[in-house]
Length: 470
Length: 136
Image (cartoon, rainbow over all chains, first blue to last red; front, top):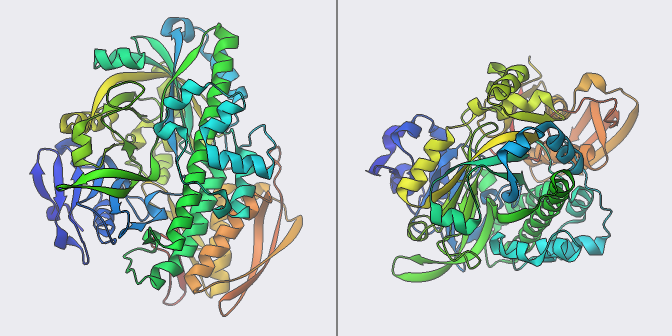
């Protein structure tokens, strides 16, 4: 598949026409500026086309401007499937179910934190378990783990990790309906049990940031963000529990796809009718993993707050928490009709135009790469009509991990960060080049595309001063 | 013949493994996965474990084998340095050598979230080849 097959619809919309790949039921749409086109890989276009072949897909197979090649779905992919005639696909959610981002706004300002950044980072590093196979401090019983799967962030709040107001500042109030712990395998429970309350590794991180630019004053005021204010951003997911649930159901779905006579262009796209027993079981388990992830981030926020209070006598308020690997049952306009659809967001963020706690479009949190800016945006009406209420999820990779390691050393990356007055702490120096800014697209350009397209609007730009890389 | 090599994949980690027969292909794929998780030079051949399984197809068997190794690493905390694979039909029996993971002794590399089915296929010309993508 080549770039020549794309049809430009307007400045930021590129169509993958229906006949591009055999069996496409709808066209694809990729949102990119001219500047971002150079990063588009043929493999990602192919994956957008492959998703368009799945039964019950509505209107388009979409890719956000941070799109890049994934496995099955592209990263940055969004697809909505009819709730009764469509499918559920674990590959459209990913292994790290409800991998997501959370932002806490502190009462601190840049100047007071900068001078004590090493001490602050060290305390956070000690308070929050991170790295390969990292474990949380709790020893949960089977029953308590099931309660986590069923209740999500509410479980954490009920156990003293935050207050009830936090829940209204989480997507879906930090709990996805329909979770069924009995559909989670014993192995997934075994993997998840010791890891609750841990960051993990890879691209998961905790960042100390400050607001370096307010892009929309009214929304920033509502979200409680001011210039120079220090914020903490967390990026983590459902750890081994989610990974195993996806692995388990992919295996079940390999056979089930054949049973339901679904032709797959890629095994990783294995899917079943959403209404089938296998589909319902997957949704119950997937929602359980999503709830585990919200609990996980809620617990880590509690420890962040403790450090902020103990070190600085300050407080931190939860701005919002978003999922960017998830499938959700939502109502959307499809043509003239309002329909229930399963929206799969694989490396894409919900960007609804209304949020009951803030009274405007929901906060959208977009992390940049390590050492570059992150953004707070809000959702819009345009997202509801163009992208099933979705936007990008990050900068999007351009270099493979192998290429990043080949072209950069950890010493160079850390020195480059130091020159930008950014301190990093990690247990795994060798992996630092994989997350270097050079390995990602320019975040400012990605944000410009979603803002100009109108699928979300920038509220504030956050610059990092300290990073804990998982 | 190269046992395995890592190739470019933007999001994740992809390796190509080779073997003169399926047994050796599976052994080399295992080494590629384990070398991603831990620096194998730091692992001693101290203990053994046996893994047995049956799958629906050869590709599924490779997937299940690697997924099981991942669980062995994360849940049982056992790093496999060397293994002898015996495949009969769609079943395998593997004797694994390695040791229990000790963070003070072993140099851990990258956390692998899962093995994917992406482009997973086994091909044979002169030797057996497989391409496997790991979600990291």
